[in-house]
Length: 303
Image (cartoon, rainbow, N blue to C red; front, top):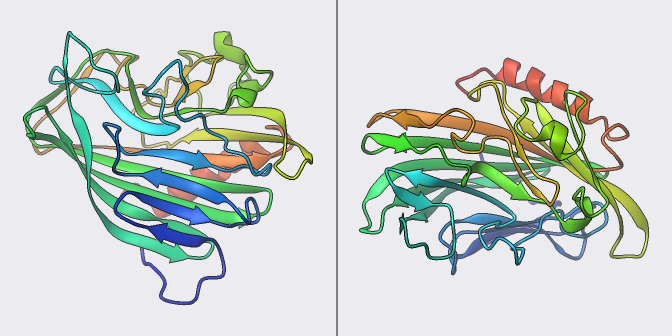
């Protein structure tokens, strides 16, 4: 990725010791459009804000029922017996932390914005178990939709065992209440499934959640957020998708029966977030996913 030195006419990029933020787009001219937090009271960095066409956040962060549902976040509940998932203290397992080390590169090249980041997954003694390279790249291509590509490479410092636990998302997100099935929204997947019964624990290329809401400027909107699975990810992609809001395309190793990674080995996971106006059919989520697959084939697996 190459950060442009030319004058930027798109969102304003704001970076400090605590966060990466974008302010001002066609979606949200006067508000923070995207906010990624790297240091604070939580045990891990997370994406708190993705603004939709309505000018409102598409994410719930953090809901009172689950303190660890940090908008869009990464974590695993059992890495060599260390919890890198929950926020609240637990008696049966020690807590680790996912620590931000540095933003290695900032991308500010309208309509592309994002960063490359180095992180370390450290146990309670401060020993690093995993080195992570995380990339976030937002593309504000259209006034009716935008994408956010997520790309994480996890490299083992020592031999690792990932427990078979549902307390894991790599990544996961919690959608705003109005987008949940319980809140009156819809959830559909690429295989024609709808709702928790047909989407939870099922393989799919993508899942879309959308709902109706009043915009910041009083206009009524239908808007949605879809998550795409990259074809090179471990397959089949089995989804954790619940009616009350959580969604993960790779819920740790829960549906794979656990897993392991030898010292020096790496695991790479890639996904695309699509924020859009209208329902899944109107926004052509299926067509957007097909283009994502085509782009992945053109770029190649080593990109």
